[in-house]
Every structure is written in structure tokens, then in C-alpha cells.
Amino acid sequence: MAKKITKFICGNCGTSHTKWVGQCENCHEWNTLVQEDIENIPKGLGHAQGTQIEFVGLKGKMDVAPRVISNINEFDRVCGGGVVLGSAILVGGDPGIGKSTLLLQLVSQVSTKARCIYISGEESIDQVRIRANRLGLFEEEISLASATNVRDIISTLEKANDVGLVVIDSIQTMYVDTLDSAPGTISQVRTSAQELIRVAKKNNFTLLLVGHVTKEGAIAGPRVLEHIVDTVLYFEGDLSHQFRILRAIKNRFGPTDEIGVFEMTHSGLTEVENPSALFLGQRRGETSGAAVFAGIEGSRTILVEIEALVVPSSFGTPRRAVVGWDTGRLSVILAVLEARCGLQFGNHDVYLNVAGGLRISEPAADLAVAAALISALKDEPITSETVIFGEIGLSGEVRPVGQMDLRFKEAQKLGFTNAYFPGHHQNQKQKINKSIKTKEIRHIGDLICLFSITSTKRDKGLGIA
Image (cartoon, one colour):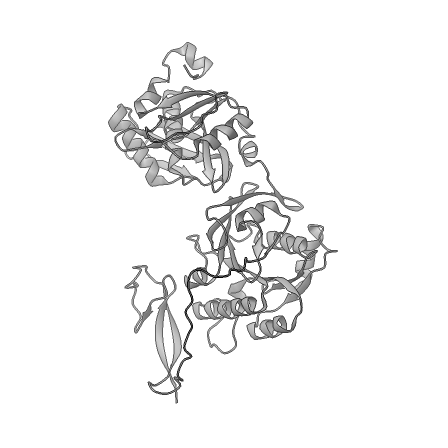
């Protein structure tokens, strides 16, 4: 007879421990171990002989996974051209960011092509109907249910016909009645997701799981949850801004790091077809400390304004505050400007912000950040028709970046006439748009030389020679 043994499972990496410890021995995270009771089957009992598997070669007939187009272009873009039937998609995001709103709008679009089921474990049927009424979706053919028992949900889905898409909102509220732990625990989240994904692949319908996130920004529950699904999407944004970014972190059927841009309105989420124009729509002409960066997010080129403020520090240790960029990278750029160019930031507070609530991780933003910092320190504006991009090395050299032709094309479309960009590498051939006046920046010192110290040129702003 099997008896239960106690194990302590790490919620971050899934490593099993025989006793509780403060720090996981594998991932070195603190306070992530959760107690689980596991049935211990004695050796030699309950182990039937397995079935021999069959091996095949790489070359063979392949079936292309069918996709369902949702007609929400930004969502289809992130998924790689539509959702794949039989796939499992995990959608995570902060509370109140708009996950349920997005998925309710999604099922309303797909419901015209296939049967859609929306199962809510957090809200009642009436609460879901109130949101649908606000979004103008109350006439759509969507099957609603409020349930949390995974056994009941699976039994219903296996008997349902022609199911195309199922939404579970959220996976942290689901529970398997054969486990003693409460909903939301590691064992419940892992087992519930595994059983639901098994049914989805068996019956060939798309499963969308809504996941809550922790205060660190990771999806709550075991890390294995992100491993067993096919696609992981993060719905992010600043609640103080109306912009929302849907970002693909993992995608077995499409590109990763692709983004979709939405705007939250009183009637729901609306697609943003030209994010650059939206992010730059609030600019106030030529202001010191502002630079426009031409970045690449997935297959899309986005122009965004980087703002810097440099003021004398009132304390012994100057402040470094960053929103939308990496704090460590800012420290590197400041160190390069001080060591290679002789600029003094040690007695100044530095504040850096990416306008619009967008978060940038591309190294090509280095040159735009440096330009904004220099402009703020010297109190000299950069002309509003200038875009800047390039990666800065520790020696001060400006390194080439990829897809420069796409950056120039997007800048020209939005009316920009000047560009600061890295000097050409001898093995790199890029098509430069001749309608944009360009200035090659090979070293960070070349950028400083472009800033004037005379009051006349300060009034006129910075142009390109």
C-alpha cells in the first residue's frame, strides 16, 4: 500500500527538497519552498512494463498547424498570425491591466468562426455580462460559465462539440478535488494546467489560461507552468497611462519579443496601428533633455521619446531614478560620459524616463540616452526632427546596430529629417534613406561636439552640420 511522504517543492524552479530550507539549493531563491504530500509507491509495485516507442527520421510528411484569425490584428501579430488550434496560451499581467477585457473581446471576434467558451473562476455570470454590456458584446454567441472544479470542466469540454477556443479566467482559481491543497498553490496550479492542456490537445481546441503575476512581475505559481504551455504572453503597461503592451515571451508557433499595442478606452481596448505617432503625440517641440529613439520591437519599428533631467544634487549621494529603462545600463552610460568625455554627473541627480509607459531593453537606445543626458546637462535642446540610435561601448565607441533601413523608413514616414546613427562597419552594408540628413557618430565624443555652448545656437536648437 502506498504511503504519503512529505516533499518541499521550490515554486521558482520546481526542485524537490526532503526538508524545508530558507534558500533553494538549485536557483538560490529565498522563501520559495512549499510543502506537498506525495504518494510513495514501493519499488516493484505498480510499475507495469512500458510500450516500445517507434523512431522516425527527420524527413517526412508534415501537417501545418491550422490557425484561427481573430481579426484583432495586434493580437494576431503577437501570436504569429493567429492562434493555433490545439495550442495552450498563457496570458499574464498585473491586476486591472485589462486581461479579462482583452480575452472577452477576443472570444467575441472568434465566435463568428467557431464555438467559444469563457469559464470564469473569479466572477459570476452577471459580472461577466456587465463587462460584455459595457463593451457592446452582449449579442455575441459566447458560452459562459462560472466554475472552478477542473473535473467538472474537463467532463463538460470532452462532451462539447465543435469547440474552437476556451478561456480559463484564471488558472489560480482552479482546483483538482483529488489534491488536499487549496486553489492557487503550486500543486493545484500545476495539476490543473496539465489536465486542461491535455484535454485541449486531445480535442484540438485553443486554450487560453489567464495567470496572475507576483509583485516581482513573474506569473504566480510554479515555473513549470510557463514550460508546459506553447505561448506565454505578458499584458503590461502603466495604470496611469492608457497604453497597453501585449508582449510574446515564448512562442512555439511564431516569433518572440513581438509586441502588440492597445489603448484602453471607456468602451474597451482599441488597437493602435501606428504606435510611433501615438507615443510622440504629446511632444512639446524643442526641449532640452529630450531625444527621439528609433527602436525595433519584434518586427515593428517604434519611435519613442526619451526624457532626461539633470539637476544639482542636494545630498551627498546623488539620485539615479529610471522609468522604462535598465538602471544598470544608465550607470554604464554615465560612467562612459565621465571617463571618456570629461562630463561631470557625480554631483547631479539624474532622472530618466521613457515616454508613454513603454519599456525599452534594446542596446541601440544607448546613443539616444546619452544625447538626452548631454542635452539636459548643457541645457541645449536637440531639434525635434532628429532621431538617434546606436550602441555605446565602454571605450566610448558607437557600435553599429541592425535593421537601420527600417529605422530610417519609420522616421521618414513620421516627418523626421535628421538622424544620428553609428558609423558604418566595413562588413556591414545598410541602405540609407537619402531623404534624411545623416550624421555618423563613431565615438561618443563626436556627439558632444555637436552641442553648441553659445546662447544663439542654444536658442535655435541643435541641428546637423
